[in-house]
Amino acid sequence: MIAVITGDIINSQHADTEVWITKLKNLLDKWGSAPETWEIYRGDEFQFKCNIDDVFWHFLAIKSLIKSQENLDVRIAIGIGQENFSSEKITESNGSAYVNSGRLLNDLKSDGDTVSIKTSNDSIDRDLNILLKWASKDFDNWTMATAEIIHEMIMNQDNTQEDLAKKFTISQSSISQRLKRANYELIVETNQYFKKKISEL
Image (cartoon, rainbow, N blue to C red; front, side):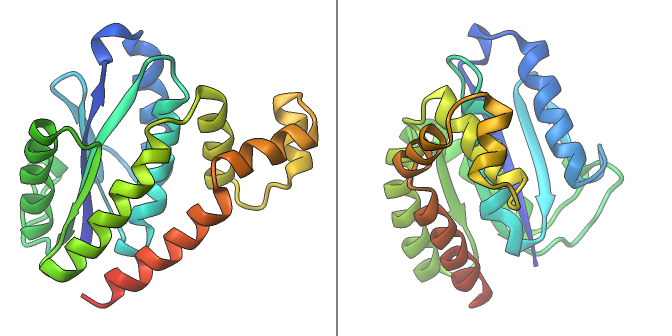
């Protein structure tokens, strides 16, 4: 099984495309090569495939990166399933993971949520989607400053608060407060829960 993330940038028409698209490309490049592993298409939509264990962390890395840009957010559909055909271009690959993710993004656009997951198991979907809806109450309201800190922690998990304080030229206590406001420890626990539930598939 693999995970496929299909997403689109919210409010992309009100932002400098070159800035966010360059940052998103640089991030996705860390995880694989285009266009086999990821691709940005139709201006502000993208698709990316990864290991199922990493999907929640990757989702958060993308979310925090985009939220750290002024006025931007991202809608993300996570599909878990099979890859029956792997093309040189991800947008031409096929299987239940791709179908689940692509259809789900269309549903997200109509129901107003910013993240959802679809697997082969309705019970696991229900549990994880309730969790994601609650979590999104926080994620969708991250300030740019909070999103920056979260992104840095996700991408460099060995960072200490002192490291972050130096990078952002603010006090260590300010870093601590931002991480508390963002419920970072709870985010780490949620990632572990996500992995456990998906391993039950």
